Length: 114
View 1 (spheres, rainbow, N blue to C red):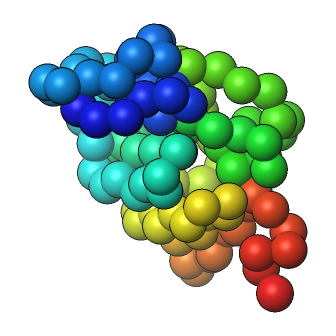
View 2 (cartoon, helix red, strand yellow):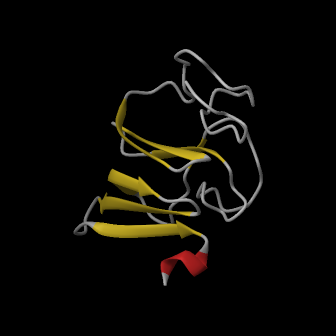
């Protein structure tokens, strides 16, 4: 529930919600991370999904297109995320590639990484 003007609840609407909502995609979640206008979910399958504002690429979808539905974050290798943290315009995920040690992934506004 809460503010949803950027689609950050991932329920397919831009309407504020005053009760619980079914999130998209409907999977069991291992972890969550959120900023004021973007939300992130780590599923038990290790995939990361995002919903909400995307003007700095913070949804991790490879573009800056807006959508009110959640989408899968695109990584350049087969990874399984275990934790995620979000700030206003950037995100950090800790991921374990299938054959390598844990790796950190950042995406979003580049000026926020300095």
